[in-house]
Image: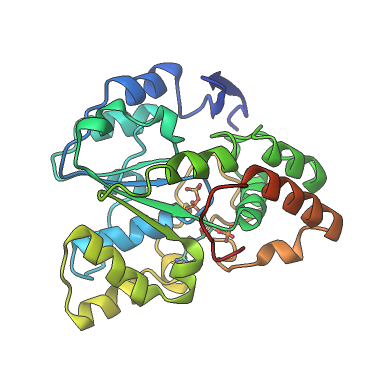
Length: 284
Ligand code: PPS
Protein backbone atom coordinates (compact mmCIF):
# COMPACT_ATOMS: atom_id res chain seq x y z
CA UNK A 1 0.00 0.00 0.00
CA UNK A 2 1.11 3.56 -0.75
CA UNK A 3 2.49 5.93 1.84
CA UNK A 4 -0.01 8.49 3.03
CA UNK A 5 2.51 11.35 3.12
CA UNK A 6 2.13 15.00 2.17
CA UNK A 7 4.29 17.95 1.17
CA UNK A 8 3.47 21.62 1.44
CA UNK A 9 3.68 24.00 -1.51
CA UNK A 10 2.87 27.65 -0.83
CA UNK A 11 0.98 26.69 2.34
CA UNK A 12 -1.17 24.09 0.54
CA UNK A 13 -0.93 20.34 1.24
CA UNK A 14 -0.40 17.83 -1.57
CA UNK A 15 -0.03 14.04 -1.44
CA UNK A 16 3.43 12.79 -2.42
CA UNK A 17 2.15 9.84 -4.39
CA UNK A 18 0.69 11.64 -7.42
CA UNK A 19 2.01 15.18 -7.05
CA UNK A 20 5.49 16.63 -6.86
CA UNK A 21 6.71 20.10 -6.07
CA UNK A 22 7.93 20.33 -9.69
CA UNK A 23 4.56 19.36 -11.18
CA UNK A 24 2.67 21.81 -8.98
CA UNK A 25 5.16 24.60 -9.69
CA UNK A 26 5.15 23.89 -13.44
CA UNK A 27 1.34 23.91 -13.54
CA UNK A 28 1.31 27.27 -11.81
CA UNK A 29 4.11 29.05 -13.63
CA UNK A 30 4.77 27.43 -16.98
CA UNK A 31 1.67 25.59 -18.11
CA UNK A 32 0.14 27.31 -21.14
CA UNK A 33 -3.63 27.33 -21.27
CA UNK A 34 -5.06 27.45 -24.80
CA UNK A 35 -8.12 29.38 -25.88
CA UNK A 36 -10.04 26.23 -26.76
CA UNK A 37 -9.30 24.42 -23.47
CA UNK A 38 -12.24 23.51 -21.24
CA UNK A 39 -11.06 23.31 -17.65
CA UNK A 40 -13.07 21.78 -14.82
CA UNK A 41 -12.08 23.32 -11.50
CA UNK A 42 -13.27 22.26 -8.07
CA UNK A 43 -12.39 21.71 -4.45
CA UNK A 44 -12.14 17.91 -3.90
CA UNK A 45 -15.35 15.93 -3.42
CA UNK A 46 -17.53 18.62 -4.98
CA UNK A 47 -18.77 16.64 -7.98
CA UNK A 48 -15.70 16.92 -10.22
CA UNK A 49 -16.11 13.50 -11.84
CA UNK A 50 -19.78 14.12 -12.36
CA UNK A 51 -18.92 17.27 -14.31
CA UNK A 52 -16.23 15.43 -16.29
CA UNK A 53 -18.78 12.79 -17.30
CA UNK A 54 -21.25 15.50 -18.33
CA UNK A 55 -18.63 17.39 -20.38
CA UNK A 56 -17.45 14.17 -22.03
CA UNK A 57 -21.00 13.28 -22.98
CA UNK A 58 -21.80 16.78 -24.24
CA UNK A 59 -18.71 16.75 -26.45
CA UNK A 60 -19.94 13.50 -28.03
CA UNK A 61 -23.55 14.64 -28.47
CA UNK A 62 -24.78 12.32 -25.72
CA UNK A 63 -23.04 9.21 -27.15
CA UNK A 64 -21.55 7.34 -24.15
CA UNK A 65 -18.87 5.41 -26.08
CA UNK A 66 -16.02 7.83 -25.19
CA UNK A 67 -16.78 8.14 -21.47
CA UNK A 68 -17.31 4.40 -21.26
CA UNK A 69 -14.04 3.44 -22.96
CA UNK A 70 -11.49 6.01 -21.75
CA UNK A 71 -10.57 6.64 -18.10
CA UNK A 72 -11.62 9.98 -16.65
CA UNK A 73 -8.01 10.94 -15.95
CA UNK A 74 -7.11 10.38 -19.59
CA UNK A 75 -10.14 12.21 -20.92
CA UNK A 76 -9.43 15.23 -18.75
CA UNK A 77 -6.05 15.04 -16.97
CA UNK A 78 -5.30 16.78 -13.65
CA UNK A 79 -2.69 19.34 -14.62
CA UNK A 80 -1.00 19.58 -11.21
CA UNK A 81 -0.22 15.86 -10.90
CA UNK A 82 2.97 14.33 -12.33
CA UNK A 83 1.22 12.01 -14.80
CA UNK A 84 -1.66 14.38 -15.49
CA UNK A 85 0.71 17.16 -16.42
CA UNK A 86 2.53 14.90 -18.91
CA UNK A 87 -0.79 13.82 -20.40
CA UNK A 88 -1.99 17.43 -20.64
CA UNK A 89 1.21 18.47 -22.43
CA UNK A 90 0.73 15.67 -24.98
CA UNK A 91 -3.01 16.24 -25.41
CA UNK A 92 -3.89 17.37 -28.93
CA UNK A 93 -6.25 20.37 -28.70
CA UNK A 94 -9.07 20.96 -28.06
CA UNK A 95 -8.30 19.74 -24.55
CA UNK A 96 -10.37 18.87 -21.53
CA UNK A 97 -8.36 19.56 -18.37
CA UNK A 98 -9.07 19.26 -14.67
CA UNK A 99 -7.67 20.79 -11.51
CA UNK A 100 -8.42 21.06 -7.82
CA UNK A 101 -6.04 24.00 -7.45
CA UNK A 102 -7.02 27.09 -5.50
CA UNK A 103 -6.91 30.15 -7.76
CA UNK A 104 -3.52 31.32 -6.50
CA UNK A 105 -1.93 28.10 -7.82
CA UNK A 106 -3.86 28.00 -11.11
CA UNK A 107 -1.76 28.50 -14.28
CA UNK A 108 -0.72 32.14 -14.56
CA UNK A 109 -1.25 31.87 -18.33
CA UNK A 110 -4.96 32.07 -17.49
CA UNK A 111 -4.67 35.84 -17.49
CA UNK A 112 -3.99 35.84 -21.26
CA UNK A 113 -6.27 32.96 -22.21
CA UNK A 114 -9.89 32.69 -23.30
CA UNK A 115 -10.09 29.08 -22.08
CA UNK A 116 -13.47 28.11 -20.66
CA UNK A 117 -13.60 27.25 -16.97
CA UNK A 118 -16.38 25.37 -15.23
CA UNK A 119 -16.18 25.74 -11.44
CA UNK A 120 -18.30 23.29 -9.47
CA UNK A 121 -19.11 23.77 -5.77
CA UNK A 122 -20.99 21.72 -3.20
CA UNK A 123 -22.39 22.13 0.29
CA UNK A 124 -19.17 22.04 2.33
CA UNK A 125 -20.72 19.78 4.96
CA UNK A 126 -21.38 17.17 2.26
CA UNK A 127 -17.87 17.78 0.90
CA UNK A 128 -16.47 17.13 4.37
CA UNK A 129 -18.38 13.86 4.79
CA UNK A 130 -17.49 12.65 1.30
CA UNK A 131 -13.83 13.58 1.92
CA UNK A 132 -13.81 11.78 5.26
CA UNK A 133 -15.07 8.48 3.84
CA UNK A 134 -12.85 8.77 0.79
CA UNK A 135 -9.75 9.30 2.97
CA UNK A 136 -10.56 6.07 4.78
CA UNK A 137 -10.34 4.01 1.59
CA UNK A 138 -7.83 5.96 -0.50
CA UNK A 139 -4.30 5.19 0.60
CA UNK A 140 -2.98 8.41 -0.93
CA UNK A 141 -4.61 10.56 1.75
CA UNK A 142 -3.79 10.63 5.45
CA UNK A 143 -6.01 8.53 7.70
CA UNK A 144 -8.80 10.97 8.59
CA UNK A 145 -8.97 9.98 12.28
CA UNK A 146 -12.32 10.41 14.00
CA UNK A 147 -15.04 12.58 12.48
CA UNK A 148 -14.42 15.04 15.32
CA UNK A 149 -10.75 15.28 14.34
CA UNK A 150 -11.52 15.54 10.64
CA UNK A 151 -14.02 18.36 11.16
CA UNK A 152 -11.22 20.38 12.78
CA UNK A 153 -8.74 19.56 10.03
CA UNK A 154 -11.28 20.51 7.37
CA UNK A 155 -12.28 23.78 9.03
CA UNK A 156 -8.62 24.72 9.44
CA UNK A 157 -7.70 23.81 5.87
CA UNK A 158 -5.31 21.08 7.06
CA UNK A 159 -6.37 18.74 4.26
CA UNK A 160 -5.12 18.18 0.73
CA UNK A 161 -5.79 21.27 -1.44
CA UNK A 162 -6.23 23.46 1.63
CA UNK A 163 -9.22 25.36 2.91
CA UNK A 164 -12.64 24.95 1.26
CA UNK A 165 -13.44 28.53 2.28
CA UNK A 166 -10.34 30.01 0.63
CA UNK A 167 -10.85 27.89 -2.49
CA UNK A 168 -14.44 28.96 -3.05
CA UNK A 169 -13.84 32.59 -2.09
CA UNK A 170 -10.73 32.80 -4.28
CA UNK A 171 -12.52 31.50 -7.36
CA UNK A 172 -15.70 33.47 -6.74
CA UNK A 173 -13.70 36.66 -7.07
CA UNK A 174 -13.62 35.88 -10.80
CA UNK A 175 -17.35 35.35 -11.09
CA UNK A 176 -17.94 38.24 -13.49
CA UNK A 177 -15.52 36.96 -16.12
CA UNK A 178 -17.37 35.71 -19.22
CA UNK A 179 -15.15 32.62 -19.57
CA UNK A 180 -16.06 31.27 -16.12
CA UNK A 181 -19.19 29.31 -15.34
CA UNK A 182 -20.19 28.55 -11.75
CA UNK A 183 -22.52 25.72 -10.88
CA UNK A 184 -23.28 23.66 -7.80
CA UNK A 185 -23.62 19.94 -7.17
CA UNK A 186 -27.04 20.76 -5.74
CA UNK A 187 -28.20 22.30 -9.04
CA UNK A 188 -27.06 19.19 -10.92
CA UNK A 189 -28.88 17.05 -8.38
CA UNK A 190 -32.09 19.05 -8.57
CA UNK A 191 -32.26 19.35 -12.33
CA UNK A 192 -29.59 17.47 -14.24
CA UNK A 193 -31.05 17.98 -17.71
CA UNK A 194 -31.65 21.70 -17.12
CA UNK A 195 -28.08 22.04 -15.81
CA UNK A 196 -26.72 20.25 -18.89
CA UNK A 197 -28.58 22.77 -21.06
CA UNK A 198 -26.98 25.65 -19.15
CA UNK A 199 -23.52 24.09 -19.52
CA UNK A 200 -24.11 23.63 -23.26
CA UNK A 201 -25.09 27.26 -23.52
CA UNK A 202 -21.88 28.32 -21.78
CA UNK A 203 -19.81 26.10 -24.09
CA UNK A 204 -21.61 27.37 -27.17
CA UNK A 205 -22.71 23.84 -27.99
CA UNK A 206 -26.19 23.07 -29.25
CA UNK A 207 -27.69 19.67 -28.53
CA UNK A 208 -31.02 18.34 -29.73
CA UNK A 209 -33.61 17.46 -27.11
CA UNK A 210 -32.97 13.70 -27.35
CA UNK A 211 -29.21 14.30 -27.03
CA UNK A 212 -29.76 16.29 -23.82
CA UNK A 213 -31.80 13.33 -22.57
CA UNK A 214 -28.90 11.00 -23.36
CA UNK A 215 -26.37 13.19 -21.50
CA UNK A 216 -28.62 13.27 -18.42
CA UNK A 217 -29.19 9.51 -18.66
CA UNK A 218 -25.52 8.52 -18.91
CA UNK A 219 -24.40 11.04 -16.27
CA UNK A 220 -26.89 9.68 -13.73
CA UNK A 221 -25.49 8.20 -10.52
CA UNK A 222 -26.95 4.79 -11.38
CA UNK A 223 -25.21 4.54 -14.74
CA UNK A 224 -21.97 6.26 -13.69
CA UNK A 225 -21.48 3.97 -10.74
CA UNK A 226 -21.30 1.03 -13.16
CA UNK A 227 -18.95 2.80 -15.58
CA UNK A 228 -15.50 1.33 -14.86
CA UNK A 229 -13.88 4.29 -16.61
CA UNK A 230 -15.37 6.71 -14.06
CA UNK A 231 -16.12 4.80 -10.86
CA UNK A 232 -12.52 4.34 -9.61
CA UNK A 233 -12.90 0.55 -9.54
CA UNK A 234 -9.71 0.22 -11.62
CA UNK A 235 -7.76 2.66 -9.45
CA UNK A 236 -4.80 1.30 -7.47
CA UNK A 237 -4.18 2.45 -3.87
CA UNK A 238 -7.84 2.12 -3.00
CA UNK A 239 -9.28 -0.39 -0.59
CA UNK A 240 -12.33 -1.34 -2.62
CA UNK A 241 -13.50 -3.75 0.09
CA UNK A 242 -14.05 -0.87 2.54
CA UNK A 243 -16.06 1.52 0.43
CA UNK A 244 -16.67 3.07 -2.97
CA UNK A 245 -15.78 6.33 -4.68
CA UNK A 246 -19.37 6.50 -5.95
CA UNK A 247 -20.52 6.38 -2.34
CA UNK A 248 -24.02 7.89 -2.05
CA UNK A 249 -24.35 10.71 -4.54
CA UNK A 250 -26.96 12.69 -2.61
CA UNK A 251 -27.43 16.13 -1.07
CA UNK A 252 -27.58 16.52 2.70
CA UNK A 253 -25.92 13.25 3.70
CA UNK A 254 -24.01 15.28 6.32
CA UNK A 255 -27.13 15.04 8.49
CA UNK A 256 -26.43 11.32 8.88
CA UNK A 257 -22.83 11.82 9.94
CA UNK A 258 -22.31 15.07 11.87
CA UNK A 259 -23.52 15.50 15.42
CA UNK A 260 -25.62 18.56 16.28
CA UNK A 261 -22.61 20.05 18.07
CA UNK A 262 -20.30 19.45 15.09
CA UNK A 263 -22.85 20.95 12.72
CA UNK A 264 -23.33 24.04 14.90
CA UNK A 265 -19.60 24.50 15.22
CA UNK A 266 -19.32 24.20 11.43
CA UNK A 267 -22.07 26.82 10.93
CA UNK A 268 -20.31 29.19 13.28
CA UNK A 269 -17.01 28.96 11.38
CA UNK A 270 -18.85 29.09 8.04
CA UNK A 271 -20.62 32.32 8.94
CA UNK A 272 -17.41 33.91 10.10
CA UNK A 273 -15.39 32.87 7.04
CA UNK A 274 -18.05 33.48 4.38
CA UNK A 275 -19.04 36.91 5.66
CA UNK A 276 -19.31 39.46 2.87
CA UNK A 277 -19.05 36.95 0.02
CA UNK A 278 -22.34 38.25 -1.36
CA UNK A 279 -23.46 35.00 -2.98
CA UNK A 280 -26.46 32.91 -1.93
CA UNK A 281 -25.75 29.21 -2.23
CA UNK A 282 -28.39 26.47 -2.44
CA UNK A 283 -27.30 25.21 0.99
CA UNK A 284 -27.56 28.58 2.76
S1 PPS B 1 -12.67 13.90 -6.24
O1 PPS B 1 -12.07 12.60 -5.87
O2 PPS B 1 -12.23 14.93 -5.29
O3 PPS B 1 -12.41 14.31 -7.60
O4 PPS B 1 -14.25 13.68 -6.00
P1 PPS B 1 -15.43 14.40 -6.80
O5 PPS B 1 -15.60 13.76 -8.11
O6 PPS B 1 -15.24 15.88 -6.76
O7 PPS B 1 -16.69 14.09 -5.85
C1 PPS B 1 -17.08 12.77 -5.53
C2 PPS B 1 -18.53 12.85 -5.05
O8 PPS B 1 -19.39 13.05 -6.18
C3 PPS B 1 -20.38 12.03 -6.20
N1 PPS B 1 -20.80 11.76 -7.58
C4 PPS B 1 -22.08 11.85 -7.98
N2 PPS B 1 -23.20 12.24 -7.32
C5 PPS B 1 -24.38 12.20 -8.00
N3 PPS B 1 -24.48 11.80 -9.28
C6 PPS B 1 -23.39 11.43 -10.00
N4 PPS B 1 -23.52 11.05 -11.26
C7 PPS B 1 -22.12 11.45 -9.34
N5 PPS B 1 -20.85 11.13 -9.69
C8 PPS B 1 -20.07 11.32 -8.61
C9 PPS B 1 -19.66 10.85 -5.55
O9 PPS B 1 -20.57 9.84 -5.18
C10 PPS B 1 -18.99 11.57 -4.38
O10 PPS B 1 -19.95 11.99 -3.39
P2 PPS B 1 -20.39 11.13 -2.11
O11 PPS B 1 -21.17 12.07 -1.25
O12 PPS B 1 -19.14 10.64 -1.43
O13 PPS B 1 -21.24 10.01 -2.64
